[in-house]
Image (tube, rainbow, N blue to C red; front, top):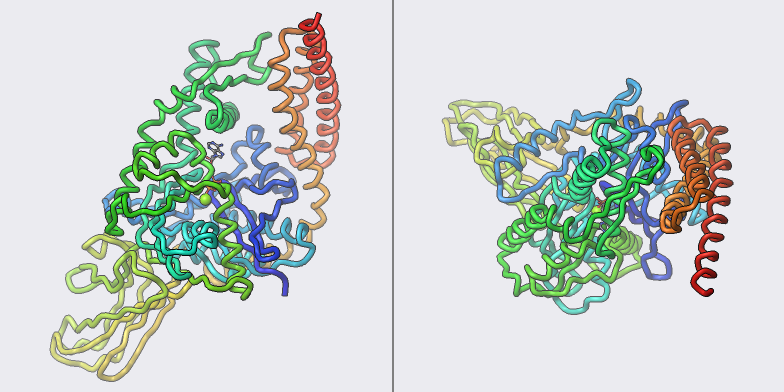
Length: 607
Ligand code: ADP
Ligand code: MG
């Protein structure tokens, strides 16, 4: 059997890793990158792009490009059981959310499957063998149906999930192998769409999650949006350009904002230049400083402090009790975020493993544990929300409290509400609210053939079992007759077995044709690489000083960029190749001109 790989199926980026000679190592994708953007685009002609190509053509194809679908799987938060949090869980839980493209509706599970398909195929190319099993990470907050949805997505992609692991636990694992003594660790994960903070305890080879908290609506996207807002305002003020009404412009400005945001993690200011087509003859540019950006996003950064303090309080700890802070998520590269972590904990955060790869590396280690290659590590996770059933008067009776270590089994006795009752409805719930109706329903079943007795005399034991994957089984037993009923909680959102079968079938058929489309994909990646090169070269050209020749070459490159994006959005194989080649030669020309200008400038200085 092939290897078990570790996969971080992220909201923004997905990453794969495997164990090589006892060490976790990243598996680069076909593009050669560690990170695969979790983006799927539907081009015309049944073409589908996943990853960097999908993201690159988004400007030309904004309505048929799907981003951040994991957020739609309804990430939940067990934060101080606030109304807002719980109702948002409920809203998303039904997860009847679909993205509709060309009249065909896609569920988050299907979109995630497309991302996993690419991860699997690219890993197979890289490793040179077939990959059928994976450890996949999920947010600690993911509830049962979201975990199940993740497994379904994997199944559709042809991957068996050997284990689901919580993301913070995986991050700790990646660092954990270096840590011998017991430690209390805070994992601070700021990704593209969500903020998760977890308190873990490591000791004698055991990892235990003590508490989890966070904000499902706080991430890099929010910072991008803020910065995009600033940019729109400045281009309007300084250049009288409206970038806020057209979806393609909005996508472009979001992309420029994200690039600028990343640069501001290492630079004190950044110049944002619009493509030529906006120019009316001149290059429109504005500058944003790190200080301005930090001020404009201070409230977002501040929000994280409250969640972190909540998690510590839940774990019964003070900041002084923490031994280590582990940073996870690309956004933790932002200096203001690191500053906040330092201020809050008084500790220098651990960040020597790349924050956007650390989770996948941990997943690979867990895969190694399961394959028997890594020893002396055991995982203990916790359940993010309380579990229980509806009891008399519509109340929520908890059986398992949130933050209980899993796997676990707990039971509680219930009785009959009416005289001579012969059946009992068991309404299985998850949440933190007092009234059953305010929590989310995980399932319902009936225990029949209860011995008829006076009210309050029957003894029905309801037992909850959470297995190592965080999947829940519930049973009810009449203790007098030993009659028992048991369900594996069926999520409201999970597709039916037939639907999974259908999707599996579809994906099998797809795989055949996908193989044929391989070459198209490689051409698309090549074309997209030219887009990437164009970005860099246009940046250099902007520094080169005014010159007619360069301006013309720049314009040719920009025309080429547009053509490539359009071709990718259209999914026309031939057009992609032609546009790619045209852009390639425009790039060569511009590159030569920039070099000439530069050496002329050097000569000028030398003279
Ligand atoms: P997710 O867990 O949501 O898939 P990642 O951990 O990959 O996300 O983080 C993605 C986020 O990190 C994006 O918002 C991205 O813009 C941001 N990011 C990546 N690199 C940097 C950087 N150098 N500075 C600031 N933000 C960054
Ligand atoms: Mg992540």
